[in-house]
Figure 1: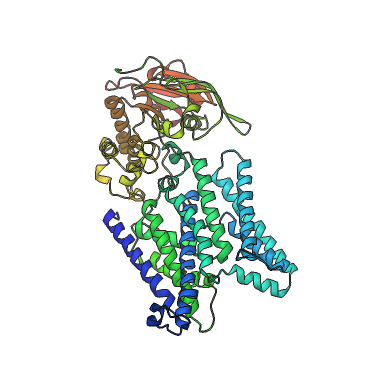
Figure 2: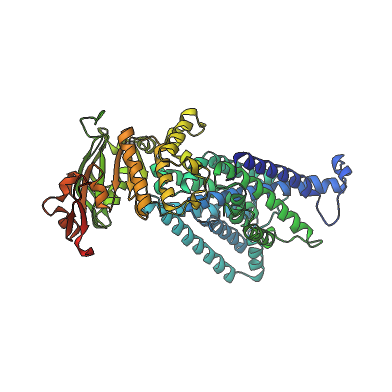
Length: 334
Length: 266
């Protein structure tokens, strides 16, 4: 067993790691920034400007997105009792991606109150997919996990096909822009993006944090959860909407950044066990930290270019996860 | 038995349940009083598990009436229901790596409000459940490292932590070797005798039902074909009609009554 004090220690370590990475990551770059200049808040100083106006918002955005995606993945893995579930399993990212692809294909360019049109289209696409999946699941009595999952997967494939169709119809430049968007990125670099994303992540995480006991029971199966006194369909609906809206918000602003939502909850389960009262904060902290680190790598690996962060997450995350899994360090829980 | 109420604790009247067009339960009626030990027997596919799931409201719908403590089951909120009824499934599921203690503590769910913490009453209920099932030494073991018998006891302990008045069990001794079967059955009998817990258990082991000193409900093709004292099922070829096979009745001076053996085994 991982006794409570040990789990608390791991949580504390994750907090320290998150703080260190959040503080250190904006400084990481092929050309080092001058810390003295940054701390003096020098007006017009290039290093200060890069740090405060570009890097810090980007790092905050990465942390929020990573935390939200990881917590979303954790919630869906509990609901579906399936280790392969991701925050994108129910089609919200495909819907959002279709929205973004449609925007690119239509060749329009607009923004509302500073919010880019592509994000608006993506959010509408994501919301449509959420409503479609929900309505289809409701058609069958009981809001069952199997129907929800199958409806989500079907809608996901449907939107993916529409994206391919649009790419086929569109010009090569459209295809490239769509493909680039699908790789996921943290290119929105002003603090406004952070403030736009914050309510989605905050609302999603708070809703799920209120349901940690229910998430624990769901991992034991619907029958035991019902027998313990949980209203399973109602709880699943709340988790579905809370997670999907949070993920829809993230995908609209950052694109469908893969891998974080699937693997981070597994890594955290190996670290702190399956109890969501500890697992949720651990996943939140590690998810955020992980994406900030990946973003730092994406900025630093090749000078004068930024690799899309969605490429980096699996490229470095998968070997790390496999090392954890196969090293036997956490064999008790795995 | 002391403390028994005159009116039934659980009363089912003419209850039917369909899955698609197939009638799984067909006009079942049943009365269980507080402190009863009811064994439900019947061939595979007779509707035993469905009946238990309808009582626990894992399955909803159906025609007819189920009343608990004199109130229609549909009036109960799920949490309220869980403080009356607890349920032990067949226990073949793969469970996450919770420890036995963590798992049993989750049994307190119906007594906790969203932001409340564990009280001394909750801790005491968990300790009592572990003690009654002999699971104290296993408290810090992971569920996925337990043997079948230990896991069954853990399931029972978690259900007991709910402190419900009725314990429903779906084949609690299936997949267990004879020693562990005896241990689980002894636990159930002790709980029934010492704490007055009402027990409703599905079983394929007719002999353990006969020796339970309680009542038997026999279901065949969704219909209740017998409810009464355990010994009564042995009269007038009832078992033969239920299972569609002959039974030999065996007697031993140490036994309170006949036991049975399917004739085909000879």
